[in-house]
Amino acid sequence: MQTKPSISSSTAPAQTAIEVEVNGEKHALTVEPRLLLAHMLRERLGLTGTHIGCDTSSCGACTVLLEGKSVKSCTVLAVQADGRAVTTIEGIGTSRSLHPMQEAFWAEHGLQCGYCTTGMIMASLDLIARNPDPSDEQIREGLGGNICRCTGYHNIVRAVKAAAKAVKK
Image 1 (cartoon, one colour):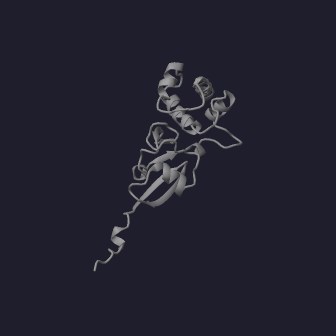
Image 2: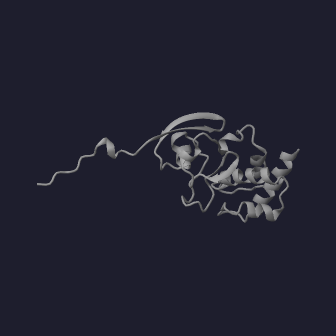
Image 3: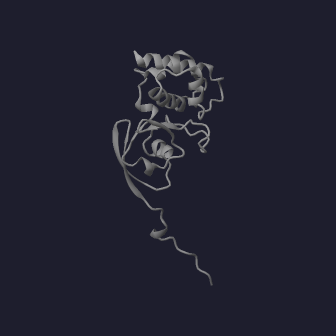
């Protein structure tokens, strides 16, 4: 007679303690080492502005800033953010006080359905931090890893240029 193998506590996934600063607020969490940053932000911290579009790092909807550099949070493990600062779309402005990049996307109609917009905005912030006066071509190249399925990118490029000017003032 065969017996069923029992599930013991030794088969439970390992947990790792991490400390991460998200949008200026420190969080001490215990996570599975395989937990993706995107899932930590959305499911553990309730920051649903970070969208998960493709889960393969192709679309960029999940883009956030890690130590000020844009990363696709569906390809970063939460444990890789340990001791580091993460900025999400929720951390750059509010509905009453939009960040100049958010304002420019709104004013220049740089969005349609809005699903990719948070990733576009976060990638654009990194782009203008590195190049405060980008050309249309540099913007298109800089946002090459972010896909919008609704627009032809023309209004997105205009929005990034408008935001770059607004930030310089």
